[in-house]
Image (tube, rainbow, N blue to C red; front, side, top):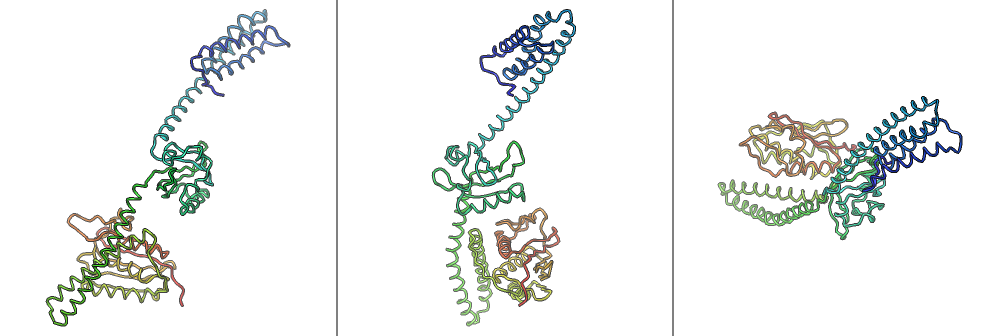
Length: 465
């Protein structure tokens, strides 16, 4: 029953209708078609109060109450003399109940006004928001789209409502979307973040980023809710940066390789001529060139990882024999450092040994860089919960707890004390994290600020052959 329904510029009907209905019921009571008692008119009057409230709200219900009391007192009461006392009491009771009903209707009106106001406010926020919002069922069928979605996609609502969201998603990313909806449908998670491409009305693929929430248990919603924003400009800028890094790295690689070759030729000539003073300088140039080559390779690896193009060649590797080979290279470069290696025994893993060497080298270089004045590094192979754990421990500056979760992010560098400067782009640990993840393992760090750090990674143990 719509308590608050009113007709604009016809408020007089809210007064006239209750009076006319009360008059009609009073006339029927005075000219009954069947025998009636003193209760009959009041039962009919209650019906008039509800009808009036449904049409004109609480004001009409008050008018109906007063009209019924007045008409019954003027016309119906005389017919019950000399037993009018009962009728008078019934009239007062009816009047009180009518007022209570009118007060109830008035309270409902206030609640409805607040709900309408809240709904308008919510709708205004949704309609004015630049973020898109749409609702789907478990299968992905669209049930609602906000105005910003219509603007973004350039389609009319009737062309979007009822279609499958999968038809708008890039074909290469549909499977990922369906997997997310399936996880939500099984209530494994309550919401999932996503980054995907969607077809706009002009036939152009745009990037959207947002979150999908399972609100089916909410009676007022009962759907999956997608909330997202257009991030095409950001993604295109990132892609341009990636292309720039890749092109620049490739362009730098050729001349640096040539320089490295010329240095080796020059070094051989100086050794032949026994020009020992120049050899030291040439070796420094050679070391710096080697660092530049590694830096270029790291930048290329970052791009390859981003594009899913980093190559792997898996084979059975015994880390107990292979890690010392990697360590020996660092011992030659850093003769002032002590590399203490220990292993529990044969440690066979199914891995790309060159990529693992890259990870171990990154961890060793990281330990050397952040432990100035401390020359002992401990490299340990251990068996932990059925997995092979490789760890590199230093006695350096350590890592604050607040930063430990971010050090494997791309280009992230540890914040150090003023006056302390450490070279690097912050990509070594990122590359290591991606390589270990590709091997199905885990990588992490245990550290306390000022008390060194222990970086570790775990891999599945391969069967003995």
